[in-house]
Amino acid sequence: MLADDPVHRSRPQRVLRAVRRAVLARRRLLAAVLTAVAVAAGLQAATAPPPATRSVTVAARDLPAGSVIGAGDLTTSAFAPGSVPADLVAEPVGGVLAAPLRRGEPVTDVRLVGPALTAGRPDLVALPVRLPDAAMAGLLRAGDVVDLVAADPQGGKPALVASGVPVLALPDAATGPGTDGLSGRLVVVGARPADVPGIADAAIRLYLTYSFAR
View 1 (cartoon, rainbow, N blue to C red):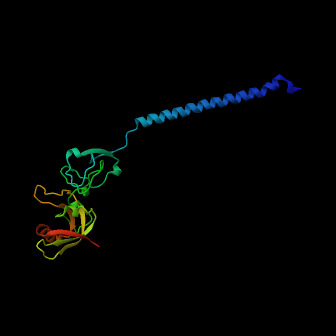
View 2 (view 1 turned 90 degrees about the vertical axis):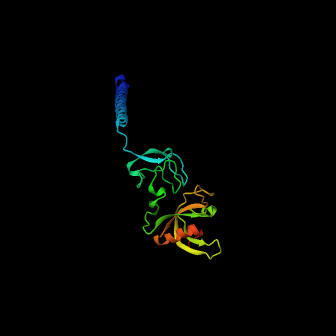
View 3 (view 1 turned 180 degrees about the vertical axis):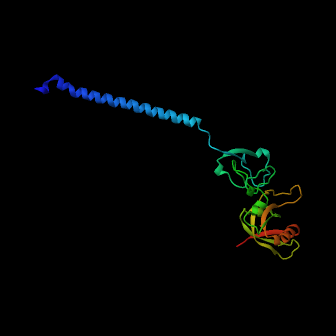
């Protein structure tokens, strides 16, 4: 008979409603807590100091090999301290590029014609040599290793001037006579000190050419 009692029939409903109210209350509390955490995280992100950076001089545009760097060719960019390359050039304006420089790339000493081109090779010195045939010189790439050969325009026998000479840079792309009246193309090679006089003499008096070293 108790099962038909309205009081007994409504008791499960009251329990269910109470449980539902408790769950809803906890959900509201949880939502409030999550909202507070999100707000706190946003405030912290907004007030946190920016990460440390270092201003580095970089190319403002793509520059070809042989370019004389001007002030307008440079800009600055923020680098993370651990990403700054070594051997940055303190005053790159006026330097001659030994290789192309891409926009945004820092100016390091190995990018410029100078002693740094022989870094890691204390047995070599950087020597600029003008090859009389610009088209022939245009076949070379930095990193090639060649044998320098001198030929006598008057009909003398060709002679090996220096062997195993690495090409360090091709900074000059001119094919016609320059302001000095010279034609051909300038190539920077890594020469052994003992070979420098012979290479310089051959470049002035004879027809200097090359063959790829084996």
